[in-house]
Length: 162
Image (cartoon, rainbow, N blue to C red; front, side):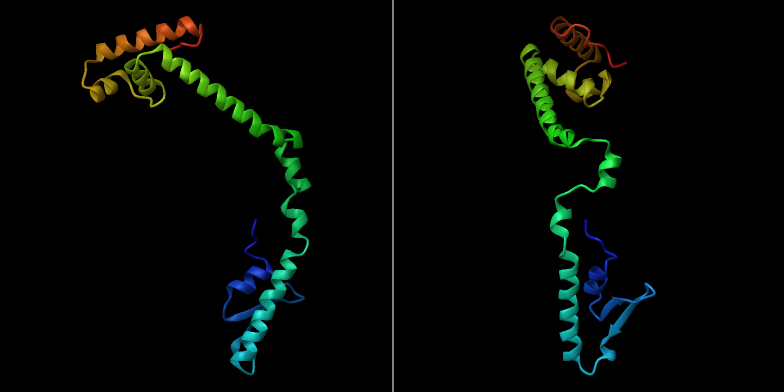
């Protein structure tokens, strides 16, 4: 991550000065007035920007592709876990997609849409009825039939959301 308080950042973003640390830790600002001419200031400004940039880059190749021990200790995830996690997520997503396809094949389009509105969008039967311009009892029957179909295929999974 880019450190906005680094010497490089402080110097680069202050266009009107050359910013450098002192022995006390307080940063010194050398402005245009501290130089004999504008050209001299610009020459040293370009040089300091480049020098700070080189210092900032030194050794970064190693750290950009590694996890520090302090970070690794706080995550609680092993290197294998970091490698395997995306594979497991992809496998879970594949299973979800297959399950969703199976549910879509079992239900009518209307049952699926109403079940989606009820369970995923969190709409109640009255809201679904208003959205589809039908009576609430029709929505209730449709949801019950859809859940009954799914309970036959997925026993114990068709619990009402409350």
